Length: 344
Image (cartoon, rainbow, N blue to C red; front, side, top):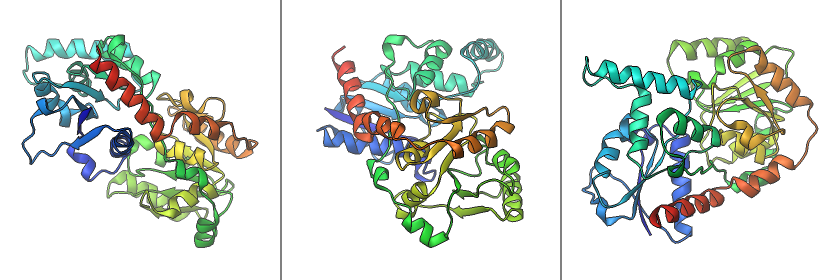
């Protein structure tokens, strides 16, 4: 089986979840005997040389190529990486209104319609969660038969993480940890900082801030609080990251939504209690072994975190992740979906 893997150009500079999902899935697929080529826009590519073209991220960057692939002989799979707090009904209505408006103003496309067009160009759509699948099915009008849920994954090495390196480097213990793009409004770092108090457990942030007003507001709060530490960017392969997970008592993602948050999977595998947004399919993974945040109610951020600090330690979530959410398991599910597509 020969696969052409296609990702947006932006993953070259934005080292986020899409890049991680694509690269880790590809490496594990190769271990299963699948031949993987990475699409290079500077080289001429004949899609007919491949059994399947797998597009990661349904968006403006992948719209044109998804439309062109519809006319090739290879099959097309899309991992849309899509979620919104809007309901499927709102999505449908927005797209209907847009179709009317486009008759008056040509070339008028919303983010919803762009993502829908990419998904409709595919032979199979591979959302990360059942919640994402439902939005794509009911919002975009994609047939259930064309959808196969393939979860996000985690490196098993985080299960072996120990706290000593982080504790000896920073002398921080019994803290709450956030890992992600601190400047992204979706991650809700500013409300987290605003709700955090001097009486709470220390807070450690790993991730970059940019030069926006939003980031400046966050940094002003960090400078004013003695029990908040910002470490900046830490490479994913840096041992200090795994050690930070192991050293933290609680890991939090108070985001507007997650699908379901690779960093939270890593932290849970390393032994953290989890306080995470309730939006985006997170309950499907973390179940009753996490505290949930309502991103529309800032007061629930610290409520969930404080409650997570009180939870008794168990091995239930860690075992569930090792059984169902490793990258090797993700690759197996992806290969099964490929085989299903090629046999249809």
